[in-house]
Length: 457
Ligand SMILES: Cc1cc2nc3c(=O)[nH]c(=O)nc-3n(C[C@H](O)[C@H](O)[C@H](O)COP(=O)(O)OP(=O)(O)OC[C@H]3O[C@@H](n4cnc5c(N)ncnc54)[C@H](O)[C@@H]3O)c2cc1C
Ligand SMILES: NC(=O)c1ccc[n+]([C@@H]2O[C@H](COP(=O)([O-])OP(=O)(O)OC[C@H]3O[C@@H](n4cnc5c(N)ncnc54)[C@H](OP(=O)(O)O)[C@@H]3O)[C@@H](O)[C@H]2O)c1
Image 1 (cartoon, rainbow, N blue to C red):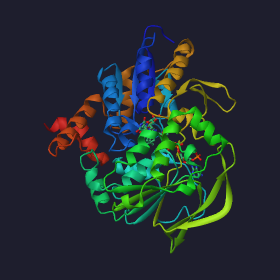
Image 2: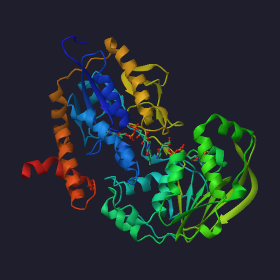
Image 3: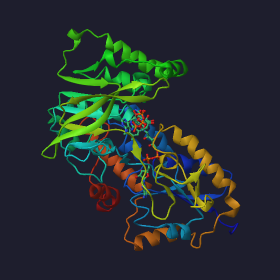
């Protein structure tokens, strides 16, 4: 590769993983020129389209990510979809290396009978709806009075809380108008969360759990018969402060006086109930059948053969996300990740594919907090920098050439200046209502604001 020009790197996906990877690379001891390519008209991935609207403190991470991108040394190219607007051979022509940081947006499967019934939903789809993702339908069927949420992770808690909360309590947040209207019409009274293991095996974090206790006019109800602790549970409580806090909060709730339970909505947390079947009539959900489980000693569970039917009219599975394969990129179908070793992408023989890297959820699977994507990015970028001398050289490295190619393809790239316009526009919409921001949801409206408003002025 010519030593007279910077190493050209494309980072695909402008979620936290892609932004941290770009930032770390830009500070490395290497002359680089970075393009950060994102399929949506807006950056920030799941921080914008996953973190719940009533978690403004976490949404503030966007401020730190914003600071990285506003420096200007990383060129943001939004509204460009890898696999649609450009393929691996196009990327290779324009860049010496590529880092895939495409995250995950889909639900993992839950293979139980009835899961395909009308009224059975994936949590990820619901999250995309309530966070105003541009590529999902604008309406969501919220007609159930009683709802089941399967899973005991933070996504299950987000979904249960958003379902149970009165819409007016979400009003001050950035919740989109169509979502507010949908939630305001919901007749829900009871949301049941089902964990297949015990309280000490719950995956949710203590802060998120305690937050449930402060939701106005929603009572949290737990059931003392669900409180079982085996040796594995005791070891987990001893070794993790997080688990200790979660178990303490849950145990305190078992002591509630039933007379205290006066709210008009209830959020029930059930443990040791594994989902067995979604029950239906005329193609619609009418219940959830769970099997009672017992702990086996090491924190795992086994079924008891005792089943319980819960009358619910909607079921949400929050059993984890699952990554999607990318055109021409080796994929591990079992793990739902790009095949890789420490971020170096591997071919079918297990050999590194020169110049191709990955980071974030699509590298290691859909678990972990935003902060974890930073250490992850560090590992990947260290390898890229170590390989710098042997990268396959781009044949058209001029930064303008890739934009000419994309425009010729009919793509409409949105740069940082376009995002600044959209950001300012959303804040102005919010100001009028005393809110920090009101999100623009339809893709075509986002594009119009980012690309055309400047021209109209
Ligand atoms: C519902 C939910 C709530 C969460 N809440 C919190 C929280 O409160 N606190 C916390 O610390 N963590 C939270 N997390 C975890 C956090 O969101 C993840 O750790 C983090 O977002 C993973 O970063 P990522 O960049 O790998 O993926 P993502 O954030 O998913 O970013 C991937 C980006 O790649 C883009 N992309 C995908 N495919 C393509 C393509 N073909 N071409 C171009 N671009 C593409 C996507 O549009 C997206 O912008 C939450 C996760 C979920 C699911
Ligand atoms: N506020 C926040 O900080 C926040 C908010 C949302 C998400 N996140 C993070 O994002 C990541 C993803 O969260 P997540 O909730 O999607 O995943 P998660 O933490 O892995 O939780 C998944 C849950 O689904 C259960 N599950 C999986 N398969 C099941 C099955 N077949 N039947 C019944 N239950 C099943 C798991 O139970 P087992 O444990 O028994 O397998 C677990 O309780 C996590 O790291 C999370 O902390 C953070």
